[in-house]
Length: 102
Image (cartoon, rainbow, N blue to C red; front, side, top):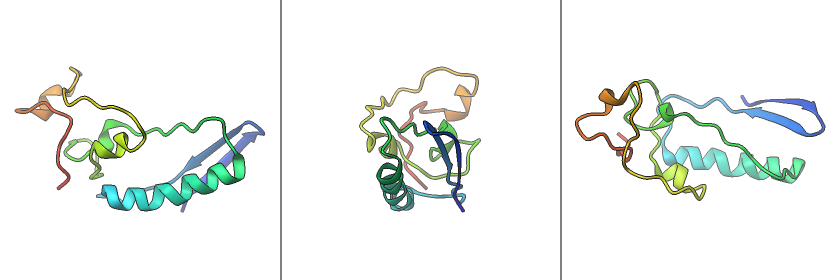
């Protein structure tokens, strides 16, 4: 069940818990009507979607099964090269972001 918080007339926070293993198709099925209703009701000047890398398929810390295509659907150009970080070795031997959903 989604929850929302209105802290003042300018801020609305919406949290939508997702099931483990959610894939691109299921994510889009949820995202489109939810964001449509949010924009209809609140008429925001901007929408901030916060997803960590643990939403990506193949991430050892996460439990979702989303591809990079989900980010691209938002108009973002995502490079395949993985930036170096403290968990870099988990993504070997390829060290790429475009991991096919399982």
